[in-house]
Image (cartoon, rainbow, N blue to C red; front, side):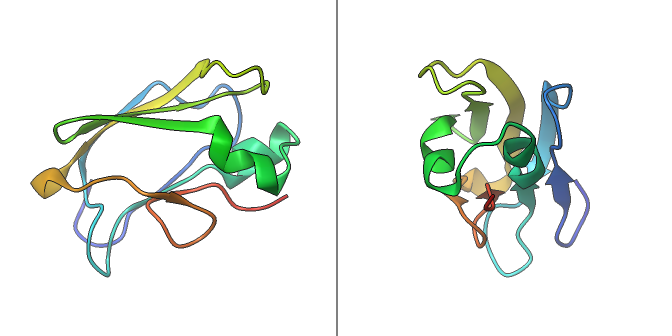
Length: 103
């Protein structure tokens, strides 16, 4: 990733499997992963989106997965994200590092 605020957008099921290094998850110019278009394409209601995202941290490496069909299994590996300075990925509607948007 470069200096400043980087934006990574996922739009469909063919996106994903990425390795993202140097992700800045803190401060005013933090990087963002946007899943809104992906969830829109899957017709996932806004209220259901947060529960369909899994972020597992192992030190400064985070595995980001989503449940594509609502069956409770996180079947799409979106990205392996390595943050700088041990930052933690936060999931939210609009103002977090991992944004899921609204339908």
